[in-house]
Image (cartoon, rainbow, N blue to C red; front, top):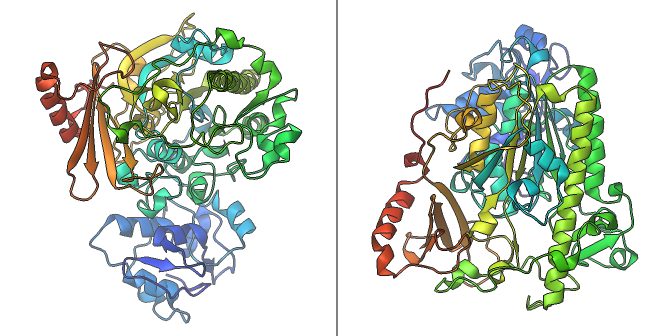
Length: 611
């Protein structure tokens, strides 16, 4: 093994394998792997190619991952190698040489932030693992929509004007009962992108990066990247602000519009642009172009990237994340004009569920803080209807942006070789049950839209030559954590071990076959405050079956149950009465307790024969 010049010298190692950087931020060794590169003494250049690695036998990040996967291996020699200024011990470090490394991400010469971000997006490519015929592999267009409940025409919403998503649904599968794992942006998205549930990602809030708990995990886009795909994120794909918005190993190309705190991309009217902070008016209708707001610019950037992918003639995984209909409800006025406010129904039910515990119905206070919203959150009927109108206007605005992208995909002749998936990160309350936004365990916050449209060719595992006139509807219980294994299996990629979801690939072949009996979700609460940090003091664990929702609110320390909920959807499609204590449901409660205790591992679908 050859010597390397190693900079900088990292000495502040902790006993748990992390180190403290100059900003006093504790980071894992895997994060260091994403932040540094090794310069080879032989050529004095950072490693750029497989040929270089094979001839020089450079130690790579994949070697570290192999060490990390084996808990019996001692990582102290690696730390010594990284921190030793004279490199005398480098050649004696007992590390294997891999001639076909899974990563071209390197170790240890600090780059400037701007240079690093450009380098890191392409540093994790798995050479040698991709199928040989790259040109004919299925592309993936992966569209995330923030705060979107199933307020779409294809889901039976008679108010929504969503022609583009309805058209997409007409050639795909609409999952009518899809559920997120936690009704909050970052935990939900990271659960989908890692294929693991919140208690495994250790992400329950908006400030934690999943690699703190899972430094070596391979995300969904990273898996495609490792198998020869170009990967790109445009818009809000991870969380939209701060540290959780960034994950260099996932992307070939540097993300665009990942963080948006510019008021000029959120608001267009002078009265809002004169304000301060992120929260100004809760709604805005402005006579402006679609590209005035950030989501229009995201759409335009996605169109440009598709053109570039077409020219490169390589498979791609393009993740596009739209921020609306997240608050504030700002959209060009023409989308507001699609609706007459008096035709938009008022929220039903008006009241919280009877007998529901306060933990369940506590507001997360996301709506409060906007300049036109009372601090106590009590809204007059006129403001409620204005907000509901604004939400639908934003849904139609995003539908139009998705339509622009889908039309361009067809114009490039890529539609026949691209799997398209559209999903909402969680649902949304619009005054129903006296709740607004999300952050609870109820149906309106946990149920999400999920549409999968397969290409009309023979390159994916599931192909179809049909052009259906209406959507295929699937009413089986699926979860966002299932998306990772599903896309991997459908596109013929190996499914990593340790995922906590179930591939619903069989449902793409037959939407009506027997499937798993339950979906699982959770949401934390602090004892008294509205917003939790980390896992909170109390965790509400919920299970959703065909007929029931059962919730246990447990103290995080010790697991003592402090409250329970049980709802019967044969009585109402929304929760109106907590049935705990009703003798009629005593046996049902016992059965649901067992289902929740057994967890997702015991709620698998019947064994499926795979081709």
